[in-house]
Length: 515
Image 1 (cartoon, one colour):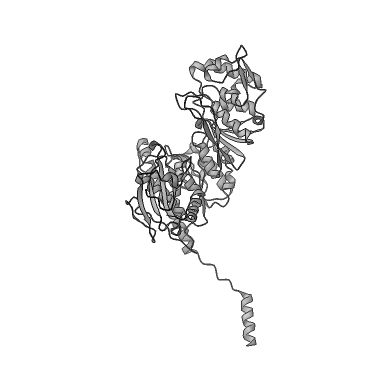
Image 2 (tube, helix red, strand yellow):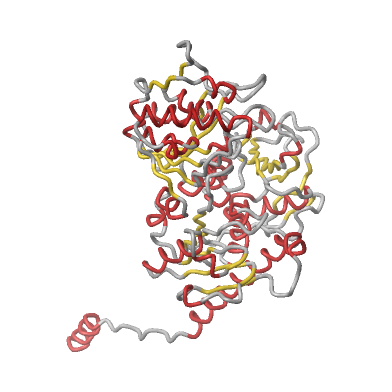
C-alpha cells in the first residue's frame, strides 16, 4: 500500500468466519452509515485481514487513506463515538495510524470515493455500496430517532452479533437513526465488553499472576458510569489444561476495590474452578494454613491441607462493597477433590459464622465474607447498566430470542424483563423471534409487535445452519414495515390548519386605513 498523506486503520473484530469480501462489505456498510460524502470524497479505501493479529481471530482492517489531518480527525471522532460501530471494533487498539500501516504489504484496494458517492478503480469488492451525500438542511430518514436493541441470544447467534445485524438493517431504512446497544449476557465470556459497550464505559487493565509458564500477566475489567466495576470469571480463568485456580479473579476484584470502586457486577461461570474459590479469597486477604502453621498458596491441590482460616486481613473494601453476582452457579468440584472441598467449606463457614452450604464456590464465599448478593435474572443486569436511563428518548425497543414460548416468561429471562420496563414507560417494542410456541399466551406480550423468522418446518440443524441468513432477512422486513408505517402516517395524516397571525393582520388593516 502506498501511503498518501494521512491514513486511518479501523480494526473490526468479526465473530463469525467469512470471506474477506463479506467482512469488507459489512465493515464499510457500517462506516458509510455514519460518514457523508463531504468527508470521504477523493479518499482511497483499502482493507484486508489484519496483518498484526492471528488470522484465526477474524480481525478485518479497514483503511481510509489520503485526507488532511482535520478530515481524518473528523472521521476518527465520528467512528469512535458511534456505539453501534463500537460493537464491531477489536477489543485492543481498534485504531491504527500511518506508521503501523506502512508495513502492510498486501492490502486490497477497493477504490477511490467519487463525487457521486461510488467507488472506482478498485477490485469491485465494494460495488453496490455508496457514500451518502451531504444532506445540508435536509434531514436523513431517521434523523434524531433513537432505537434500543436488547435481544437475547438466538442459539449460536449471540446477543452481541444479533445487535450488529439489527444495526445494519435499521440503518438501511433509517440512515440517521441512533443505535443504543444493550447486549444480554448472563455472566460468561463477553460480559465485560457487552456492558462497557452498552454504557459507553471504560476499560481498566490490571496485572495478574501468571498461573502457568507463558500465562496471562494482565487482564481487563470494565467501569460503568465511573462507579461500577464489571468483571467476569470466565474471562480470567486459565485455558483448559493450564490449571483452574481462581487467584486471578481475586486479583482483579482487589484491583477494582483498590481503585475505590464499591459497586461490582461479577459474572461467575464457575464450572472450570477446582479450588472452591480458595485462590480468589487469598488474593483478597484471607489466609489459609495447614496443620503445621504453614501458609498455603491457594490451589486445588492444597484443599486437603487446609486446617485453619484467618479472615483478619480481609480487604476492608470488600465488606463495604455492593457486589451483584450474575449466574452464580456452584462450581463443579472434581471427584478427586470432593471430600477436601467439603472440609474446606466447613472450615470457612466456621471462621465466618455461616452455614457450609453458603460457602460454595467464589460466589458463595463472596456472599459469606463480603455481603454479596446473587441475581439469577436479567433484571440485575438491566439495573447494572441503568437501563431505565438508557430508555430516555428511545422511540423503539427491539428484543427477542430463538423460541418465544410460555417458558420464556419465567426465570427472569430477557424478553419479559425488557417488555415490562418498556410497558411502564409506554415505549413501542418489537419482538423478533426465531419461532413462536403453540401454547404461548400472547396477552403476555401486551402491545408489542412480534415477528418470527422460521415459519417453514425445518430441523434444529437446518435452523442453526440458516440462522444468520433468516435473521438478517427478518430484520430487514421488520424495519421496512416500520418505515412504511412511518411514511403512511406522514402522507396520510391531515395537515394541521395554518395558524393565522392576528397581530399581523391587525397591523396590516391599520396600515390600509392610514393610506
